[in-house]
Amino acid sequence: MILPKVRDPRFVTVRRGGTLTDTDHRLLALWAAACAEHVLGLFESARPEDPRPRQAVEHARAWARGEVGMMRARAAGGHAMGAARDLRGAPRYAAYAAGQAGAVAHVAAHELGAAAYAIKAARAAAPAGEGGTAGRLECRWQRDRLPEAVRELVLDDQRLRNDICWSVFDR
Image (cartoon, rainbow, N blue to C red):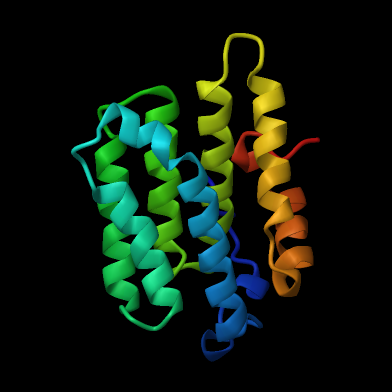
């Protein structure tokens, strides 16, 4: 479970009664795509013939540019999740990160899922005993790439949802 039971209005678009602007929604999608892409090689090394997670990342970016609709981006995210089903460890988490990135077009709060799964992938790929360090480095990498316009929103979201995101955002 990575979504809260009660939706945060800061992650609901203005046209749906929340406070999230379309511009910030696109920035969240682009950041989620970057987080997912950063660990995508962990999936692709296990399943080089399966394009679904990469396509989800590409669709998230295409949605942010206005080139594909929300339904196509969301569907690509679902297909990436499907690519993860029979895998374990880092490849599975990397595919889930891509799936979450694709879903940001539909529900902006999936941005944190992409980041959390990417951290889980980095932890799982690390040598024995180094997972914590790898996770912290991945979290730092992600935070360094947060667009200024959504930085405080995402950092607050990490604080609020850390417990349902496997505590991956702890320092």
